[in-house]
Length: 224
Image (cartoon, rainbow, N blue to C red; front, side, top):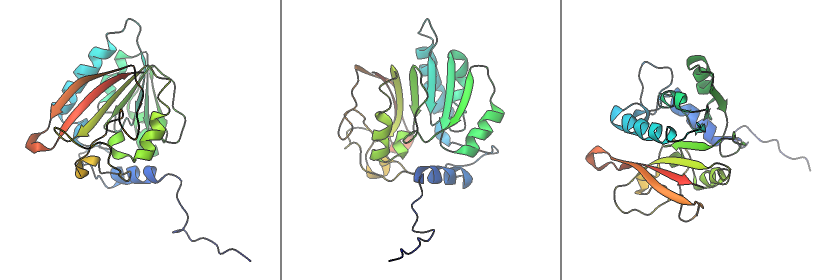
């Protein structure tokens, strides 16, 4: 029997997260300014960005030999551009191809490169340290698990997440996209079920409470 040809609506797209993130920038779902690409207040609010930069620069400068850093989900690079000079090599990665093309044109340094990758699917660049700043909070548990499975080759992993203040039930299931687990009164914790990410040491580097009880931005260092 001849099979019925699938319509475009029936064909499953290979990169649903890519589509979702492209829409975020095209429709300016994280806010807008005069820039072509805008990664939201988390990448531009000085009360959030300045303490983070102080924290990460202090960590990077604590090493005699500079580290190779992979910034997974580098976004509009408003934050990453301040870190490049403190590294041996800096690799900015994002899933949105137009965004990466823009970053390549805009930000130049001998030790800087950009790659367009789906970090849940593609092989990651090699390096010493991974930065995941408010990235995993947008992804499904399955995609988070895929990413964590690839991080064992890195020595240091710095994860920043927007979580509820106080006690919360971690790792609620979500569909990848603009939203985060906070809407379900949940937040990401890679050390507990269903992930059980194995580390040698965990250290909280930074915790910034948001106004009006909108949660906390927590940055943690994991030594693998």
